[in-house]
Image 1 (cartoon, each protein chain N blue to C red):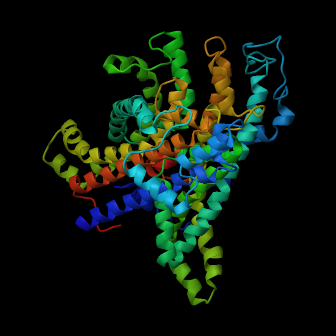
Image 2 (tube, each protein chain N blue to C red):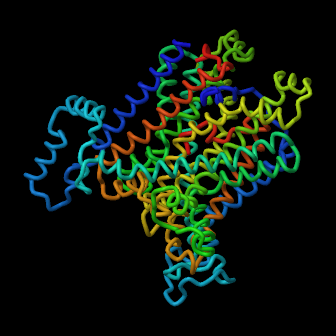
Image 3 (cartoon, rainbow over the protein chains, first blue to last red):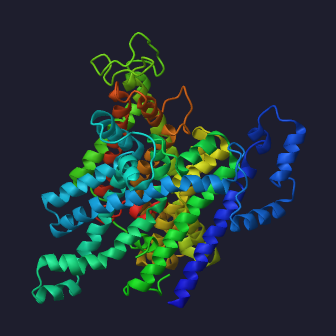
Length: 313
Length: 298
């Protein structure tokens, strides 16, 4: 157990380090002079030299990298040129909307996906199961931004139930402004939840463990509700953690559709304005979120699920 | 069960070639049919498009779908159907370019690593782990931030990550194949390692990767249209499906067709490719959409 945990943490650290190296090179790989690109054509040589010094671009590469690592570890992400304030502060202001959107989207995907998965698993290979499966194929093929637009058209513009842009905090505000984008995000994920949870439930329902509860004369509701679902909770958690990357990608697009002030729309702005500091920090943050989520899930699984074979990898 | 385990369970079973079209399921045929129509439509776009891609007509803006404009016209009076055909041509071309060369590289890298094992294998496996762990869309956007908006960023960024999945599929397949009698026999027959890998192992490994590639095409098309929607894809005057949809967003209420109909084309492609993949995999890959097993590709 301990050696598994150590290896798992070591892998996460390795990936995080790889991420640091990769994001470090973002500004160095820009063709031409990134400082000149950022400052535009009219910058004086003095300004360029000052900014170059400020970014430590005049130091040896190795010094730059160790500075980058030590600054990042202490939470200093530098200053954004275009917004003229510390990157960490900008990210702090924008984090709320994105986090709320991801959490809400996850919740909706579970509310939609789990019941459908149970129905499909209880009646495998019937018309009901087949139409649910066809439905998941359909939601997977939907482009998220297009689904968002369609929801905005129907529920926002035609029916007027929800606003089609902007963000308000607080429970009521979130329910008002984030329901449509969260639904667009959650539907795609719900398809994945249904497929994975269905096959995992089917596996559990055919196991000897469940056979034993059947022979004890327990009702089907009790078997599924109490025994089978409990064993599938971990599978569901894994699906969610594994899809953090997908959700982050989804927020980038949906924040643009619904004009939400989150990290995704910030990333797109940063690319358009060539704010390399900001791009660097956001890429690192997104990568780190994925790595840490998968680490947390694997560790939780190791503790909670006795069936996990720790010797494997 | 971690992601890694999910993938490794899909070990490759060497199978004989199936007899002709008759052995294919209905799912497979419908899927292949949809893809064939869409690829042909894209390929023949200059021949079948009734209007030019950027043929403006300011006397006829936002006209609803009719016989002369099957998908209506947009805010500059351009025929949406013609634009969609040209966009399909561009998008499908890019999708093939960013799906199949990485497939070949990944399969070979995975096969070699799986066959020899050792330090090369260990290093490759770690690199693949890192690649797969990262959020795909954000990574591609970072590449675009470096090289600037346009197709170039996609052509560089996607293959940079995409080979890793095929390398993992092929490596885990090779670990199984390596112990199979027919591969052991090639050693007994004194074949060179190169011949064993290229002529005997790789054709078997290609199968699962080619099946997976149908899902990969969907993911890549969704990615492409998302980037085009964000304004980070092909730059005007070239149209992409995503950019046509983005153009239509401001007139969603008055001219719903501009944003809606090109989106349906994306959905149709996705359904076709997923049906084909599902059908071809005859149950072995079922239940594992790419997002479930290969998270960061979404």
